[in-house]
Length: 111
Ligand SMILES: [Zn+2]
Image 1 (cartoon, rainbow, N blue to C red):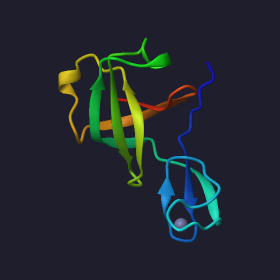
Image 2: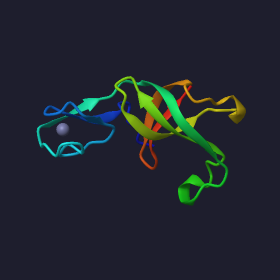
Image 3: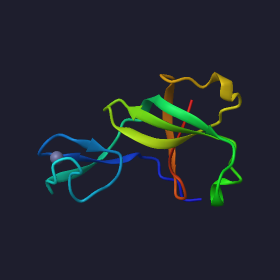
């Protein structure tokens, strides 16, 4: 499996907006004065849900935690939280760390 060790994002030099994907122009102001950045690997769980029935290639993974994580730069991204053994312990505000980018599902975080 091809694993990426950095969490890629884009920073707008015009309005300072940051987004957790690589884009050619700023989603906020439309400026093309953007640069690729590596986002910080620490984040907190902003909201989450436990998915019991996955679809397609996610079917084998279910049940799993699908979360919106906010990084230290206050960038929000949708991720899977891996290595959770007891779903009842997952809470909003929990600290999580970036693990890798799964080529099929995107960024993966863990505790
Ligand atoms: Zn901008």
